[in-house]
Length: 340
Ligand code: NAD
Ligand code: MG
Ligand code: MG
Ligand code: MG
Ligand code: MG
Figure 1 (cartoon, protein in one colour):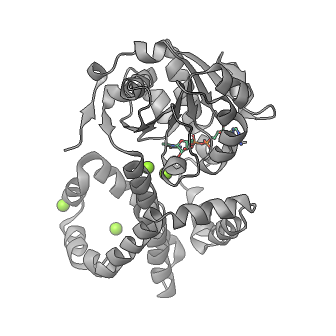
Figure 2 (cartoon, rainbow, N blue to C red):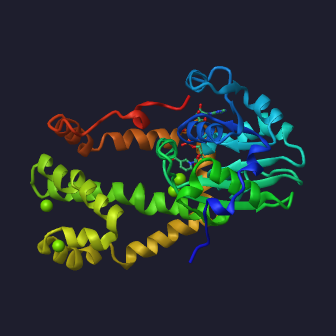
Figure 3 (cartoon, rainbow, N blue to C red):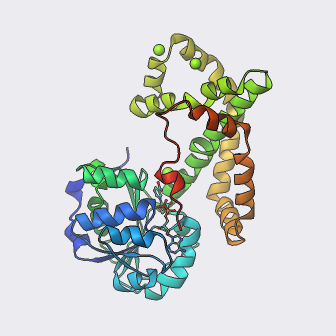
């Protein structure tokens, strides 16, 4: 059983006594900065001069300075820029201001786990990673609740890094829900695996393959869309509420029987063997290297794959069908906001 921290395990004073910089003001950045401020923490936001996020942060009454100024002023520096930008922001703005006694925080372990960022000696290196998007982290905090967090310490230079990490986790509301103790390696490897094999890669490809199978067999794409994509939300909501067991309880016996008979035929041991290959590419660092190399080259592979995927026929079918469903929101904040 994982070790779970609650508010009782953390003393807010440990973070209220420090000066905190939140670098970036996207999904996570806005939630951390606002929750910290409302927990009585002295926080400033670090954003580049031309950043479009500046206006939004200032409208909330936050002090906005450049990432370098924020890192210079603060003794706790939380890095909440996109993972592929983090080591560049680190080299330019943070590292020159990172002296012993300060603490470097992350919400994802990728750059530390694979050695793209190597903090100097004498610096605490901690992680507080909410298990939800920033908009939920902010909303739950505002309602007196919180989103669970993963908490890890990579380097405890001060001997007080855990106190500091737990205080930060409490200040953003995470320990109201619970903080799970982990390591940078575990958080990074499981996060990448989950999104690649199951949540993003696995689910997207499963939906496409099901849609393709029906359309190639001569069924109408509109009907295939409903069966293979639209109804997935109902199934996932049931799993979210009560596990796979509640989902199976809720669907018809016909559907449940079909699940047992055909699920293992589609997702068989060969799929698991390839999941292990994917995990291997994650743990040996080759996925991170491929992603960062491509990003540094201007993301040609990433852009090509994104364009190709947007051309999949299921997207055109879905665009038309969603117009029939007034309650299905398209173009919500996260989808349209952009991050510049
Ligand atoms: P985001 O893309 O929503 O926001 C990035 C922010 O960084 C924006 O404010 C942008 O203006 C700024 N930025 C971009 N490039 C920059 C640069 N070169 N210099 C300075 N600022 C720059 O990012 P996010 O989704 O909040 O992710 C931040 C971190 O949180 C990542 O490590 C991510 O893995 C982690 N995380 C995200 C989620 C999530 O649900 N989004 C959940 C848990 C952890
Ligand atoms: Mg994750
Ligand atoms: Mg992730
Ligand atoms: Mg059905
Ligand atoms: Mg049933």
